[in-house]
Image (cartoon, rainbow over all chains, first blue to last red; front, top):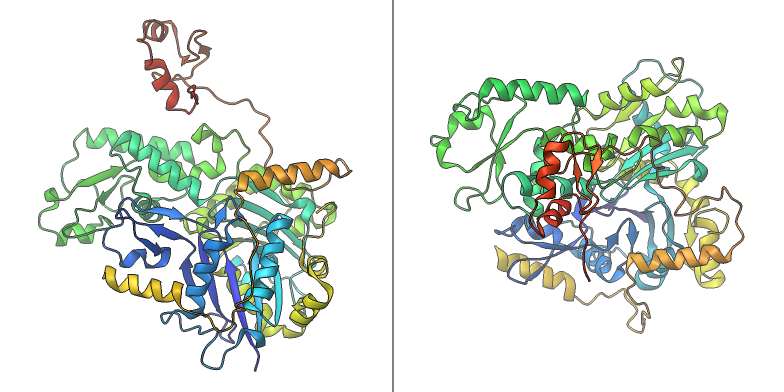
Length: 440
Length: 121
């Protein structure tokens, strides 16, 4: 039987796996980078966790501002994914052969034509897959409409969709590593006129946190991985930024300049992060009440207290003015612009079918905040439904899996065969899979 | 541990891949993002596109209609004024005395904090 390989090639991580009937199965997540360590060794980004020293690592990523500029690097990472014993994908072993394998690949929106051409060449000439379908990650989300409905957590089901392959109207917010895209998908097709991009992503947020910590507490300019861990473990999206600041101020006044041990607990706005001491921990960890009880000498730890950084960092998405260097509209205004550049009739339909994918939506409180803010700017009678999966990183992959397992006949219509590529050339592939825009 | 990851990687990177065409010669050269974007700009300039055409450049979020807020570089209060000599923003006359009597080079260090310093190349 012909297997289907699905690769969600994001700028931070590659999500890879064979299409399965088990729609809840999560794909392998491989860091999309090559790391040069302090002692000048090159290792794949995915293996850096096994490395003892995470300090001073330099990342080389194939993606540069959402464009796949370096296939030389990407190919090494793909080769590792295809052949690694850890993942057990065995793309060219154990009876598997790419010549008899379908491929579903995702790419970033507005990938420049030159780069797209490189990708098509590599898929067919270098790896030689039998057939291949490529689109942006968000365009797969409508196929996963059953799961989407569950995410909205409302009992009211929109009727008449039972026999549909995909949801007719879907607004996807894809907040990834390099940038945040707002993408309306109408009748299963991306409505390019409504697509908007906000140049703030996980990379920017980590960088901003690194600058704040370096300026206020310790110099962490070399510690990208550490700062990323701190961001993932401590940051949250506030319901109201000014209120949170005020609450924090009250707490600071109450605790005084030197808080007594035990006065900071899980309920307080202030958190303590134990920095790596390279004896007990090489990565550092968040101090929770449970850990405080178990560790005898808390005074021995080198602790960093985080105050407003916890919510100022994610708030940058809503109000880029916080980071002072970006004079741009925030996320809410960008969503608003995107909705209002769609045809008038579908606007309310899009608003009631919003799904968020991408790693930034792992910040807690994102859904509540989005709901609140969108309510302020959109007409009252519009029903706002927002869905964020528990694991928004792999949601795009799972949606592509829905296409591959439930609607293979759809895939057959969409895909490009290798024989067609060799007969009709790249122009044909681009016509079928490329971005259908004037002058693209 | 490190030796293990090394062997795994070198095995992954150096392993001969049976499904690859050995004669395939990629004639691509790595182009940085900046160059690709300027190429795209040149390409678009040669086309006659409608005013509202969607391109790589037109999808970016718009700048806001509200003016940018400015803050004092020394105190962090609202900075309504800008020193003509150095470009530093300041809150009031009291702070201006500090700005005016600043030693040479210090003003650039303050500007560097908000990436507004002059970089000589």
